[in-house]
Image 1 (cartoon, helix red, strand yellow):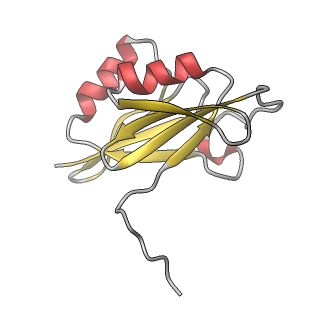
Image 2: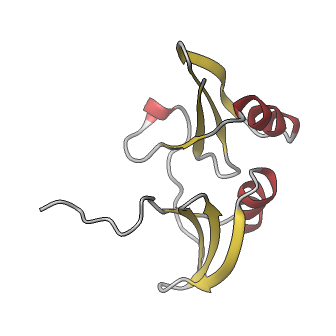
Image 3: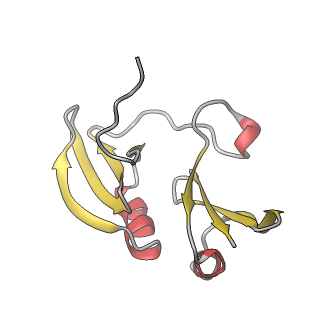
Length: 134
């Protein structure tokens, strides 16, 4: 059996104790479209942000989460350590993030001819990668 997708996107859930900062980062800085928030089934609020066909779900549980994922370099711990967006305006995104004081994890770097990337940390320290093809 294989997964029979009904949509060509994957949604991401990010649990936070800092919903204001996280929503502002993804909505105001990166320009994601905010959809109406919904109650989180296990208590709290799910803030819904559209990124292309994907949905980024910023979840603020009630009561707040008791532990935090390990921070640091991608190879510092196991588990989901970053996620990637394919973009056409890498330099602009990275400059905007730097100007806003966002932590730059990897500056704009050419991976191989025609492929460049940059990586930043959101307010909770989750790594977000931007990749462009020329």
